[in-house]
Image (tube, rainbow, N blue to C red; front, side, top):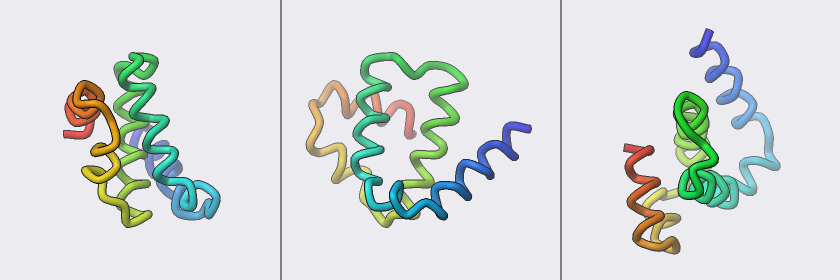
Amino acid sequence: MKSSVMSHVNDEIRQNSAVMQQAAKCFNFIAQALEAETLRGATATRIVGAAKTLVQTAGLDANQLLANMSPETQQIVRAFFG
């Protein structure tokens, strides 16, 4: 079931041009939520999985996006993104 949900989310990301156009902003919001610990556990894992797909599909460089964030935020986000 989880993989079918992720598959659906990934399909939605690819098909939604508004999300693709704002991919960097979406990544930043997810990073802020991870730092604030409003995303945790299985939910954080699912959202991070979708964010990885979003970043790849949009052709963004996650390291470049992280460069604008504090070192603490970078460390937290990298721990989730692996």
